[in-house]
Length: 135
Length: 394
Image (cartoon, rainbow over all chains, first blue to last red; front, side):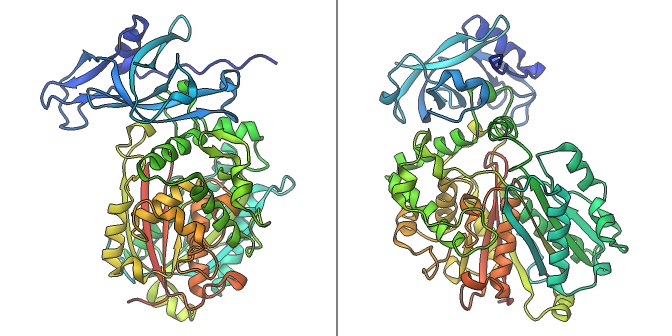
Protein backbone atom coordinates (compact mmCIF):
# COMPACT_ATOMS: atom_id res chain seq x y z
CA UNK A 1 0.00 0.00 0.00
CA UNK A 2 1.26 3.48 -0.83
CA UNK A 3 2.23 5.60 2.13
CA UNK A 4 -0.48 8.24 2.62
CA UNK A 5 0.64 11.65 1.44
CA UNK A 6 0.85 14.32 4.15
CA UNK A 7 -1.95 16.85 3.85
CA UNK A 8 -0.70 20.21 2.61
CA UNK A 9 -2.34 23.46 3.71
CA UNK A 10 -5.29 24.39 1.52
CA UNK A 11 -4.32 28.02 1.08
CA UNK A 12 -6.67 30.99 1.02
CA UNK A 13 -5.17 33.49 -1.40
CA UNK A 14 -4.96 36.29 1.18
CA UNK A 15 -2.82 33.98 3.35
CA UNK A 16 -0.31 33.29 0.56
CA UNK A 17 2.31 35.74 1.98
CA UNK A 18 2.33 33.72 5.21
CA UNK A 19 3.30 30.52 3.38
CA UNK A 20 5.81 32.34 1.17
CA UNK A 21 7.46 33.67 4.35
CA UNK A 22 7.65 30.28 6.08
CA UNK A 23 9.53 28.97 3.01
CA UNK A 24 12.12 31.64 3.86
CA UNK A 25 12.01 30.63 7.55
CA UNK A 26 10.13 33.74 8.63
CA UNK A 27 6.97 33.79 10.74
CA UNK A 28 4.76 36.70 9.73
CA UNK A 29 1.38 37.65 11.14
CA UNK A 30 -1.00 40.51 10.46
CA UNK A 31 -1.32 43.75 12.41
CA UNK A 32 -4.22 46.16 12.14
CA UNK A 33 -3.10 49.67 11.13
CA UNK A 34 -6.13 51.17 12.87
CA UNK A 35 -6.52 49.41 16.23
CA UNK A 36 -2.97 48.09 16.44
CA UNK A 37 -3.93 44.53 17.39
CA UNK A 38 -2.10 41.52 16.00
CA UNK A 39 -4.10 39.01 13.97
CA UNK A 40 -3.66 35.30 13.31
CA UNK A 41 -4.75 33.47 11.17
CA UNK A 42 -4.70 35.91 8.22
CA UNK A 43 -7.99 37.73 7.54
CA UNK A 44 -9.34 40.04 4.86
CA UNK A 45 -10.19 42.55 7.59
CA UNK A 46 -9.44 43.09 11.27
CA UNK A 47 -11.67 40.81 13.40
CA UNK A 48 -11.42 43.33 16.25
CA UNK A 49 -12.31 46.68 14.64
CA UNK A 50 -13.35 45.63 11.08
CA UNK A 51 -10.71 47.81 9.45
CA UNK A 52 -9.46 46.56 6.09
CA UNK A 53 -6.02 48.12 6.71
CA UNK A 54 -4.26 44.94 7.80
CA UNK A 55 -0.50 44.71 7.25
CA UNK A 56 2.06 41.94 7.59
CA UNK A 57 4.65 42.12 10.39
CA UNK A 58 7.30 39.64 11.45
CA UNK A 59 6.58 37.80 14.69
CA UNK A 60 9.31 37.31 17.30
CA UNK A 61 8.53 33.62 16.96
CA UNK A 62 8.55 33.36 20.75
CA UNK A 63 5.64 32.14 22.79
CA UNK A 64 4.42 29.70 25.40
CA UNK A 65 2.65 26.35 25.28
CA UNK A 66 -1.02 26.97 26.12
CA UNK A 67 -1.74 23.24 25.92
CA UNK A 68 -0.25 20.12 24.36
CA UNK A 69 -0.81 16.42 23.79
CA UNK A 70 1.44 13.54 22.81
CA UNK A 71 -0.39 11.61 20.11
CA UNK A 72 0.44 7.97 20.81
CA UNK A 73 -2.14 6.07 18.71
CA UNK A 74 -5.15 6.29 16.35
CA UNK A 75 -4.03 9.38 14.41
CA UNK A 76 -5.17 10.38 10.92
CA UNK A 77 -3.73 7.93 8.32
CA UNK A 78 -1.05 10.28 7.05
CA UNK A 79 0.42 10.64 10.54
CA UNK A 80 0.68 6.96 11.55
CA UNK A 81 4.38 6.98 10.60
CA UNK A 82 5.03 9.98 12.86
CA UNK A 83 3.88 8.39 16.14
CA UNK A 84 4.47 9.57 18.77
CA UNK A 85 4.17 13.27 17.88
CA UNK A 86 3.23 16.37 19.83
CA UNK A 87 0.39 18.74 18.96
CA UNK A 88 0.41 22.02 20.83
CA UNK A 89 -1.49 25.26 21.08
CA UNK A 90 1.07 28.04 21.18
CA UNK A 91 0.41 31.57 22.44
CA UNK A 92 2.79 33.95 20.67
CA UNK A 93 4.20 37.02 22.45
CA UNK A 94 2.11 39.19 20.14
CA UNK A 95 -1.05 37.77 21.74
CA UNK A 96 -2.25 35.41 19.02
CA UNK A 97 -2.68 31.64 19.19
CA UNK A 98 -1.76 28.96 16.66
CA UNK A 99 -1.73 25.18 16.41
CA UNK A 100 1.57 23.50 15.69
CA UNK A 101 3.86 20.64 16.67
CA UNK A 102 6.58 20.70 19.32
CA UNK A 103 9.80 19.23 17.94
CA UNK A 104 13.48 18.82 18.88
CA UNK A 105 12.81 17.87 22.50
CA UNK A 106 12.22 15.06 24.96
CA UNK A 107 8.46 14.43 24.72
CA UNK A 108 7.83 14.02 28.41
CA UNK A 109 9.58 17.27 29.32
CA UNK A 110 6.89 19.37 27.67
CA UNK A 111 4.59 21.27 30.03
CA UNK A 112 1.91 23.94 29.91
CA UNK A 113 3.24 27.51 29.88
CA UNK A 114 6.71 26.33 28.78
CA UNK A 115 8.50 28.93 26.62
CA UNK A 116 9.01 27.92 22.99
CA UNK A 117 10.59 29.37 19.84
CA UNK A 118 9.56 28.89 16.22
CA UNK A 119 11.55 26.58 13.97
CA UNK A 120 10.76 25.52 10.42
CA UNK A 121 10.20 22.11 8.83
CA UNK A 122 10.05 21.62 5.10
CA UNK A 123 6.97 19.61 4.10
CA UNK A 124 7.65 19.62 0.33
CA UNK A 125 8.92 22.00 -2.35
CA UNK A 126 5.90 24.26 -1.88
CA UNK A 127 5.32 24.26 1.86
CA UNK A 128 7.36 24.76 5.02
CA UNK A 129 5.47 24.45 8.30
CA UNK A 130 6.18 26.61 11.37
CA UNK A 131 6.90 24.35 14.35
CA UNK A 132 8.13 25.10 17.85
CA UNK A 133 10.98 23.91 20.09
CA UNK A 134 11.68 24.64 23.75
CA UNK A 135 13.88 27.68 24.39
CA UNK B 1 -32.60 34.15 25.19
CA UNK B 2 -35.91 34.16 23.32
CA UNK B 3 -39.57 34.92 23.86
CA UNK B 4 -40.51 31.26 23.38
CA UNK B 5 -40.77 30.50 27.11
CA UNK B 6 -43.63 28.08 27.65
CA UNK B 7 -45.08 28.61 24.17
CA UNK B 8 -44.00 25.38 22.48
CA UNK B 9 -43.70 21.79 23.64
CA UNK B 10 -42.36 18.39 22.69
CA UNK B 11 -45.29 15.98 22.42
CA UNK B 12 -43.67 12.83 21.02
CA UNK B 13 -40.29 11.12 20.87
CA UNK B 14 -38.89 8.17 18.92
CA UNK B 15 -35.55 6.42 18.84
CA UNK B 16 -33.95 3.30 17.36
CA UNK B 17 -31.08 1.42 19.02
CA UNK B 18 -27.53 2.69 18.52
CA UNK B 19 -25.02 0.20 17.07
CA UNK B 20 -23.63 -1.29 13.86
CA UNK B 21 -26.32 -2.47 11.49
CA UNK B 22 -24.69 -3.09 8.10
CA UNK B 23 -27.83 -4.72 6.69
CA UNK B 24 -30.15 -1.87 7.67
CA UNK B 25 -30.80 0.93 5.18
CA UNK B 26 -29.87 4.33 6.59
CA UNK B 27 -33.32 5.72 5.80
CA UNK B 28 -34.84 3.13 8.18
CA UNK B 29 -33.21 4.87 11.14
CA UNK B 30 -34.92 8.10 10.09
CA UNK B 31 -38.37 6.83 9.19
CA UNK B 32 -38.67 4.32 12.05
CA UNK B 33 -37.63 7.00 14.58
CA UNK B 34 -40.16 9.38 13.01
CA UNK B 35 -42.90 6.73 12.98
CA UNK B 36 -42.28 5.98 16.67
CA UNK B 37 -42.40 9.69 17.52
CA UNK B 38 -45.74 10.14 15.71
CA UNK B 39 -47.16 7.06 17.49
CA UNK B 40 -45.78 8.29 20.82
CA UNK B 41 -47.47 11.67 20.37
CA UNK B 42 -50.72 9.93 19.51
CA UNK B 43 -51.31 12.34 16.64
CA UNK B 44 -52.36 11.63 13.07
CA UNK B 45 -49.41 11.52 10.67
CA UNK B 46 -51.21 14.11 8.58
CA UNK B 47 -50.98 16.64 11.42
CA UNK B 48 -47.29 17.07 10.55
CA UNK B 49 -46.86 20.14 8.35
CA UNK B 50 -43.11 20.79 8.62
CA UNK B 51 -40.29 18.24 8.48
CA UNK B 52 -36.87 19.22 9.76
CA UNK B 53 -34.19 16.57 9.21
CA UNK B 54 -30.66 17.23 10.38
CA UNK B 55 -27.67 16.17 8.30
CA UNK B 56 -25.91 12.82 7.98
CA UNK B 57 -22.17 12.85 7.37
CA UNK B 58 -21.49 9.26 6.31
CA UNK B 59 -22.85 9.64 2.79
CA UNK B 60 -23.58 12.65 0.62
CA UNK B 61 -26.19 10.76 -1.47
CA UNK B 62 -28.03 9.76 1.73
CA UNK B 63 -27.88 13.29 3.04
CA UNK B 64 -29.31 14.47 -0.27
CA UNK B 65 -32.28 12.13 0.27
CA UNK B 66 -32.90 13.79 3.63
CA UNK B 67 -32.78 17.19 1.92
CA UNK B 68 -35.05 16.16 -0.95
CA UNK B 69 -38.11 15.06 1.04
CA UNK B 70 -37.67 11.28 1.15
CA UNK B 71 -38.97 11.10 4.76
CA UNK B 72 -42.23 12.82 3.76
CA UNK B 73 -42.81 10.43 0.86
CA UNK B 74 -41.81 7.25 2.74
CA UNK B 75 -44.23 8.04 5.60
CA UNK B 76 -46.95 9.55 3.38
CA UNK B 77 -47.09 12.83 5.30
CA UNK B 78 -49.57 14.36 2.89
CA UNK B 79 -50.00 17.68 4.69
CA UNK B 80 -46.28 18.35 5.08
CA UNK B 81 -45.70 21.64 3.28
CA UNK B 82 -42.00 22.14 3.94
CA UNK B 83 -38.92 19.92 4.32
CA UNK B 84 -35.87 21.90 5.39
CA UNK B 85 -32.60 20.62 6.76
CA UNK B 86 -31.24 22.15 9.98
CA UNK B 87 -27.63 21.38 10.74
CA UNK B 88 -25.27 22.69 13.39
CA UNK B 89 -23.28 19.51 14.07
CA UNK B 90 -23.69 18.43 17.69
CA UNK B 91 -25.85 21.49 18.36
CA UNK B 92 -28.50 20.36 15.87
CA UNK B 93 -30.79 18.99 18.61
CA UNK B 94 -30.71 22.31 20.48
CA UNK B 95 -31.35 24.13 17.19
CA UNK B 96 -34.38 21.90 16.48
CA UNK B 97 -35.99 23.33 19.61
CA UNK B 98 -35.36 27.00 18.95
CA UNK B 99 -35.95 26.93 15.19
CA UNK B 100 -38.94 24.58 15.27
CA UNK B 101 -40.31 26.56 18.20
CA UNK B 102 -39.90 29.84 16.29
CA UNK B 103 -41.75 28.51 13.24
CA UNK B 104 -44.62 27.42 15.45
CA UNK B 105 -44.91 30.69 17.37
CA UNK B 106 -44.63 32.64 14.10
CA UNK B 107 -47.54 30.66 12.69
CA UNK B 108 -45.51 29.16 9.84
CA UNK B 109 -45.85 25.62 11.17
CA UNK B 110 -48.32 23.84 13.44
CA UNK B 111 -46.57 20.55 13.99
CA UNK B 112 -42.85 20.05 13.31
CA UNK B 113 -41.21 16.65 12.94
CA UNK B 114 -37.47 16.82 13.76
CA UNK B 115 -35.46 13.77 12.68
CA UNK B 116 -31.91 12.51 12.76
CA UNK B 117 -30.41 9.39 11.15
CA UNK B 118 -26.80 8.36 10.62
CA UNK B 119 -24.73 5.31 9.65
CA UNK B 120 -21.27 6.33 10.85
CA UNK B 121 -20.80 2.91 12.49
CA UNK B 122 -21.26 0.56 9.55
CA UNK B 123 -21.07 3.15 6.78
CA UNK B 124 -17.36 3.96 7.30
CA UNK B 125 -14.35 1.95 8.52
CA UNK B 126 -12.70 2.70 11.89
CA UNK B 127 -9.72 4.42 10.24
CA UNK B 128 -12.14 6.05 7.78
CA UNK B 129 -13.99 7.52 10.75
CA UNK B 130 -10.75 8.93 12.19
CA UNK B 131 -9.84 10.36 8.78
CA UNK B 132 -13.32 11.83 8.26
CA UNK B 133 -13.11 13.49 11.66
CA UNK B 134 -9.56 14.75 11.07
CA UNK B 135 -10.97 16.98 8.35
CA UNK B 136 -14.67 17.59 9.14
CA UNK B 137 -14.76 20.89 11.01
CA UNK B 138 -10.95 21.10 11.28
CA UNK B 139 -9.22 23.89 9.35
CA UNK B 140 -7.47 22.48 6.25
CA UNK B 141 -5.07 25.41 6.28
CA UNK B 142 -4.22 25.90 9.96
CA UNK B 143 -4.74 22.55 11.71
CA UNK B 144 -5.03 19.52 9.38
CA UNK B 145 -1.33 19.77 8.30
CA UNK B 146 -0.24 19.36 11.94
CA UNK B 147 -2.10 16.07 12.50
CA UNK B 148 -5.02 17.53 14.43
CA UNK B 149 -8.08 15.29 14.95
CA UNK B 150 -10.89 15.01 17.48
CA UNK B 151 -9.00 12.92 20.06
CA UNK B 152 -6.14 15.41 20.07
CA UNK B 153 -8.61 18.28 20.47
CA UNK B 154 -10.18 16.60 23.51
CA UNK B 155 -6.67 15.87 24.83
CA UNK B 156 -5.59 19.51 24.46
CA UNK B 157 -8.64 20.65 26.41
CA UNK B 158 -8.07 17.97 29.08
CA UNK B 159 -4.38 18.82 29.53
CA UNK B 160 -5.03 22.51 30.13
CA UNK B 161 -8.08 21.90 32.32
CA UNK B 162 -6.16 19.46 34.54
CA UNK B 163 -3.23 21.91 34.69
CA UNK B 164 -5.48 24.74 35.85
CA UNK B 165 -7.74 22.84 38.25
CA UNK B 166 -5.77 19.84 39.50
CA UNK B 167 -8.47 17.43 38.30
CA UNK B 168 -6.95 13.93 38.22
CA UNK B 169 -7.08 11.23 35.54
CA UNK B 170 -9.18 9.14 37.94
CA UNK B 171 -11.75 11.94 38.35
CA UNK B 172 -11.90 12.42 34.59
CA UNK B 173 -12.42 8.68 34.03
CA UNK B 174 -15.30 8.80 36.50
CA UNK B 175 -17.41 10.58 33.85
CA UNK B 176 -17.22 7.44 31.70
CA UNK B 177 -18.20 5.28 34.68
CA UNK B 178 -21.15 7.54 35.54
CA UNK B 179 -22.49 7.56 31.98
CA UNK B 180 -22.08 3.78 31.73
CA UNK B 181 -24.21 3.29 34.84
CA UNK B 182 -27.06 5.00 32.99
CA UNK B 183 -26.39 3.08 29.77
CA UNK B 184 -26.69 -0.19 31.69
CA UNK B 185 -30.37 0.79 32.07
CA UNK B 186 -30.84 1.93 28.46
CA UNK B 187 -31.89 -0.73 25.92
CA UNK B 188 -30.96 1.60 23.03
CA UNK B 189 -27.36 2.05 24.26
CA UNK B 190 -24.46 0.33 22.51
CA UNK B 191 -22.31 -0.22 25.65
CA UNK B 192 -24.23 -1.70 28.59
CA UNK B 193 -21.72 -3.72 30.61
CA UNK B 194 -20.41 -2.20 33.86
CA UNK B 195 -17.23 -0.14 33.60
CA UNK B 196 -14.69 0.78 36.29
CA UNK B 197 -12.25 3.66 36.64
CA UNK B 198 -9.43 1.09 36.53
CA UNK B 199 -10.65 -0.26 33.17
CA UNK B 200 -10.78 3.26 31.74
CA UNK B 201 -7.29 4.11 32.98
CA UNK B 202 -5.78 0.85 31.71
CA UNK B 203 -7.21 1.25 28.19
CA UNK B 204 -4.92 2.25 25.33
CA UNK B 205 -3.48 5.78 25.40
CA UNK B 206 -4.69 7.73 22.36
CA UNK B 207 -3.38 11.26 22.88
CA UNK B 208 -2.10 12.03 26.38
CA UNK B 209 -3.92 12.11 28.77
CA UNK B 210 -6.91 10.79 26.77
CA UNK B 211 -7.43 7.02 26.76
CA UNK B 212 -9.42 4.82 24.39
CA UNK B 213 -12.33 4.29 26.80
CA UNK B 214 -12.58 8.07 27.20
CA UNK B 215 -13.24 8.41 23.49
CA UNK B 216 -16.69 8.15 21.96
CA UNK B 217 -17.19 5.64 19.16
CA UNK B 218 -19.18 6.22 15.99
CA UNK B 219 -22.35 4.20 15.38
CA UNK B 220 -25.56 3.99 13.38
CA UNK B 221 -28.72 5.31 14.93
CA UNK B 222 -31.63 7.67 14.74
CA UNK B 223 -34.00 9.68 16.85
CA UNK B 224 -36.93 12.04 16.37
CA UNK B 225 -39.17 14.44 18.22
CA UNK B 226 -42.37 16.31 17.52
CA UNK B 227 -42.93 19.95 18.43
CA UNK B 228 -46.17 21.86 18.54
CA UNK B 229 -47.67 24.86 20.34
CA UNK B 230 -48.25 24.46 24.08
CA UNK B 231 -51.95 25.08 23.52
CA UNK B 232 -52.25 22.19 21.04
CA UNK B 233 -49.86 20.09 23.12
CA UNK B 234 -52.28 20.08 26.05
CA UNK B 235 -55.00 18.66 23.76
CA UNK B 236 -52.67 15.95 22.49
CA UNK B 237 -50.95 14.67 25.62
CA UNK B 238 -51.17 14.78 29.40
CA UNK B 239 -47.45 15.48 29.75
CA UNK B 240 -46.17 17.98 27.23
CA UNK B 241 -42.54 18.93 27.70
CA UNK B 242 -42.34 22.70 27.52
CA UNK B 243 -39.46 24.67 26.09
CA UNK B 244 -38.64 27.10 28.91
CA UNK B 245 -35.44 28.83 27.92
CA UNK B 246 -32.45 28.83 25.66
CA UNK B 247 -29.07 30.49 25.33
CA UNK B 248 -26.12 30.11 23.01
CA UNK B 249 -22.70 31.48 22.13
CA UNK B 250 -20.24 30.94 19.28
CA UNK B 251 -16.58 31.17 20.31
CA UNK B 252 -14.52 29.85 17.38
CA UNK B 253 -14.27 28.05 14.05
CA UNK B 254 -10.59 27.01 14.17
CA UNK B 255 -9.98 25.25 17.50
CA UNK B 256 -6.72 27.12 18.11
CA UNK B 257 -8.65 30.40 18.02
CA UNK B 258 -10.68 29.47 21.12
CA UNK B 259 -9.74 32.02 23.81
CA UNK B 260 -10.37 29.58 26.69
CA UNK B 261 -10.29 25.85 25.91
CA UNK B 262 -11.31 25.11 29.52
CA UNK B 263 -14.52 27.16 29.41
CA UNK B 264 -15.90 27.99 25.92
CA UNK B 265 -19.19 29.94 25.84
CA UNK B 266 -21.17 27.87 28.34
CA UNK B 267 -21.46 30.38 31.19
CA UNK B 268 -23.07 33.08 29.04
CA UNK B 269 -25.33 30.63 27.24
CA UNK B 270 -26.46 29.15 30.54
CA UNK B 271 -27.10 32.57 32.09
CA UNK B 272 -29.44 33.47 29.22
CA UNK B 273 -31.25 30.14 29.37
CA UNK B 274 -31.76 30.16 33.14
CA UNK B 275 -32.87 33.82 33.09
CA UNK B 276 -35.46 33.10 30.41
CA UNK B 277 -36.74 30.03 32.27
CA UNK B 278 -36.66 31.94 35.58
CA UNK B 279 -34.91 28.97 37.15
CA UNK B 280 -31.48 28.31 38.68
CA UNK B 281 -29.28 25.20 38.53
CA UNK B 282 -30.68 24.24 41.97
CA UNK B 283 -34.13 23.85 40.39
CA UNK B 284 -32.89 21.38 37.78
CA UNK B 285 -33.65 17.69 38.33
CA UNK B 286 -31.69 16.27 35.37
CA UNK B 287 -28.64 17.54 33.48
CA UNK B 288 -28.27 16.13 29.95
CA UNK B 289 -24.73 17.36 29.23
CA UNK B 290 -23.03 16.89 25.85
CA UNK B 291 -20.31 14.33 26.49
CA UNK B 292 -18.41 13.37 23.33
CA UNK B 293 -15.37 13.15 25.64
CA UNK B 294 -15.34 13.35 29.48
CA UNK B 295 -13.67 16.78 29.51
CA UNK B 296 -16.62 18.38 27.73
CA UNK B 297 -19.14 16.94 30.20
CA UNK B 298 -16.96 18.21 33.06
CA UNK B 299 -16.67 21.71 31.61
CA UNK B 300 -20.38 21.90 30.70
CA UNK B 301 -21.44 20.69 34.15
CA UNK B 302 -19.30 23.31 35.90
CA UNK B 303 -19.91 26.24 33.60
CA UNK B 304 -23.68 25.71 33.83
CA UNK B 305 -23.33 26.19 37.57
CA UNK B 306 -23.94 22.69 38.95
CA UNK B 307 -20.75 22.93 41.01
CA UNK B 308 -17.61 25.02 41.50
CA UNK B 309 -14.89 24.88 38.88
CA UNK B 310 -12.61 21.90 39.42
CA UNK B 311 -15.20 19.85 41.36
CA UNK B 312 -17.08 18.06 38.57
CA UNK B 313 -14.67 15.12 38.47
CA UNK B 314 -15.08 14.45 42.18
CA UNK B 315 -18.84 14.75 41.88
CA UNK B 316 -18.93 12.18 39.07
CA UNK B 317 -16.59 9.91 41.06
CA UNK B 318 -18.65 9.91 44.24
CA UNK B 319 -21.90 9.11 42.49
CA UNK B 320 -23.91 12.34 42.60
CA UNK B 321 -24.48 12.07 38.84
CA UNK B 322 -25.34 8.32 38.84
CA UNK B 323 -28.78 6.70 38.97
CA UNK B 324 -30.22 7.61 42.37
CA UNK B 325 -27.73 10.48 42.74
CA UNK B 326 -28.34 14.10 43.67
CA UNK B 327 -28.09 15.42 40.09
CA UNK B 328 -28.70 12.66 37.51
CA UNK B 329 -26.50 13.54 34.51
CA UNK B 330 -26.51 12.40 30.88
CA UNK B 331 -29.08 9.76 31.69
CA UNK B 332 -29.07 7.90 28.36
CA UNK B 333 -25.35 7.11 28.76
CA UNK B 334 -24.38 9.85 26.32
CA UNK B 335 -22.08 9.54 23.37
CA UNK B 336 -19.56 7.73 25.59
CA UNK B 337 -21.93 4.80 26.22
CA UNK B 338 -25.10 5.07 24.12
CA UNK B 339 -22.77 5.83 21.20
CA UNK B 340 -21.96 8.77 18.96
CA UNK B 341 -24.17 9.13 15.91
CA UNK B 342 -22.86 12.42 14.52
CA UNK B 343 -25.39 15.19 14.98
CA UNK B 344 -27.53 12.54 16.67
CA UNK B 345 -25.53 12.55 19.89
CA UNK B 346 -27.06 15.92 20.70
CA UNK B 347 -30.51 15.02 19.36
CA UNK B 348 -30.51 11.93 21.58
CA UNK B 349 -29.92 14.14 24.64
CA UNK B 350 -32.95 16.30 23.76
CA UNK B 351 -35.01 13.14 23.28
CA UNK B 352 -33.75 11.75 26.60
CA UNK B 353 -34.59 14.97 28.46
CA UNK B 354 -38.12 14.79 27.04
CA UNK B 355 -38.39 11.06 27.81
CA UNK B 356 -37.51 11.67 31.46
CA UNK B 357 -39.88 14.62 31.81
CA UNK B 358 -42.69 12.59 30.18
CA UNK B 359 -42.06 9.83 32.73
CA UNK B 360 -41.25 7.29 30.00
CA UNK B 361 -37.68 6.39 30.94
CA UNK B 362 -38.64 3.05 32.55
CA UNK B 363 -35.74 1.53 34.54
CA UNK B 364 -33.75 4.76 34.53
CA UNK B 365 -36.67 7.09 35.25
CA UNK B 366 -35.71 9.89 37.61
CA UNK B 367 -38.69 10.00 39.98
CA UNK B 368 -40.64 13.23 40.08
CA UNK B 369 -38.41 15.04 37.56
CA UNK B 370 -39.88 18.43 36.63
CA UNK B 371 -37.04 20.39 34.99
CA UNK B 372 -34.13 19.34 32.80
CA UNK B 373 -31.29 21.15 31.10
CA UNK B 374 -29.86 19.97 27.78
CA UNK B 375 -26.64 21.10 26.13
CA UNK B 376 -25.29 20.82 22.61
CA UNK B 377 -22.06 21.82 20.93
CA UNK B 378 -20.91 21.37 17.36
CA UNK B 379 -17.72 21.15 15.33
CA UNK B 380 -14.64 21.48 17.51
CA UNK B 381 -16.78 22.79 20.41
CA UNK B 382 -17.29 25.96 18.40
CA UNK B 383 -20.58 26.85 20.07
CA UNK B 384 -22.43 26.37 23.33
CA UNK B 385 -26.19 25.78 23.34
CA UNK B 386 -28.21 25.43 26.54
CA UNK B 387 -31.91 24.56 26.57
CA UNK B 388 -34.19 24.23 29.57
CA UNK B 389 -37.22 21.98 29.44
CA UNK B 390 -39.95 21.23 31.95
CA UNK B 391 -43.22 19.34 32.31
CA UNK B 392 -44.71 22.48 33.83
CA UNK B 393 -44.24 26.18 33.15
CA UNK B 394 -42.91 27.71 36.39
